[in-house]
Amino acid sequence: MKICLYGASSAALDESYLKAAGALGSAIALRGHSLVYGGGAQGVMGAAARGVRENGGAVVGVAPKFLNADGILYNCCSELIFTNTIRERKQIMEQRADAFIMAPGGFGTFEEFFEILTLKQLGRHNRPVAIFNTNGYFDELQKFIETGVREKFISEPCLDIYLITADPDELLTYFETYDPTAVDVKHLKNI
Image (cartoon, rainbow, N blue to C red; front, top):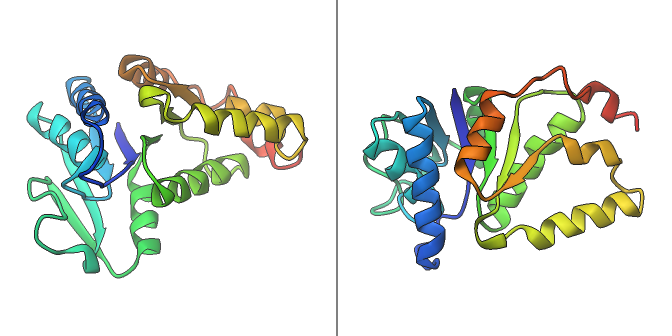
């Protein structure tokens, strides 16, 4: 399975985030999967990529040409694809992936993840989606989503179209056992 990961590229993160991302990357490779991601060498992205690579897994980086500068991109990718724009980058990552993870990150991570989640809600794909909740980073986001459900901005069945967990094994088991017929995503856009 080709797993797309969205996450931070910052080198200023607490070491616990990097350790967790590295453990996730290791688990991805050890379970026979590969990584598709934004190509970053630092932060959550770089730690996950190194975890995959150090355990024999394939790493596909997808990055816009303007990020091709010293130290920004991971130079040990199995394949590194350059695009002209961020939009092209996201499209290639989506096309190449069988599943999607949002790991801790900032604006770019949120934007990428919510586009994929919205496309699932609209029935444009029915691949597994998960939030990797290191250190409870996404607890407040989950509460915000639940507020959206309570206030009727988000339909309650949308809570079932993704998994939120801090456990790499639980996350990967969810992906590996995902049943696309269990959730009628085509019905969600009409709720």
